[in-house]
Length: 233
Ligand SMILES: CC(=O)N[C@H](C=O)[C@@H](O)[C@H](O)[C@H](O)COP(=O)(O)O
Image 1 (spheres, rainbow, N blue to C red):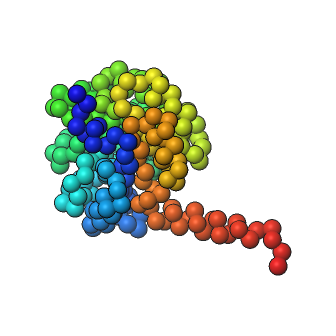
Image 2 (tube, protein in one colour):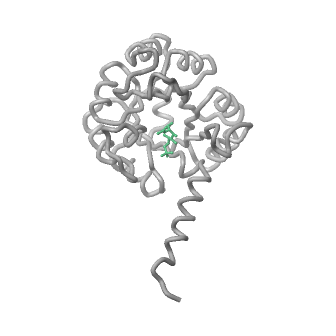
């Protein structure tokens, strides 16, 4: 029997509603309003960062939530749900799925991915592995995560650095992995989101193209600036 969370999100759009401290939309109930707007627009799930935003989003919508805590540590480059501390905080607030960095990068205080996954599975918590390569996806599956997301392709030095979503990784992961594979990362148009589903993604996560107005404005401003380059009047 397919798990109810994965049934709910199958073939749908999950909107990532995040704004870090240095982003204009950070704080207050802004991300809760973003999540409500996403729900009204047809999203079937939310991805959210921080206890504050997750608690506010839970008040605003009934959509299932993929929760993360982004936290920087001096001794590691891992910042998406890096340690047991963030896992425990997310389990305390309550989310349908906890997503964590499942790359090869070393975690803070030498904590280990395997231990975090085992802890969550022991407590009945669904786990999403944010990966950047097929090898990381296969390994995450082998240690018992519930789904894979291509979130970190392009954000590790050894994964393809490109503007487009990593369709190749998505296609390979769909072919080789038996658990749900979510397309996520630089999906910037409805057509790209639809293409990910055609490639076999269980669902897609779109964030910046919907919930980061500064980045959206930058794309339009660049296109406008470029439009008249080379034309003489
Ligand atoms: C690299 C990293 O930290 N990605 C984060 C993961 O939670 C988010 O900042 C992204 O917005 C999310 O993955 C959706 O991706 P995009 O914003 O490209 O649609």
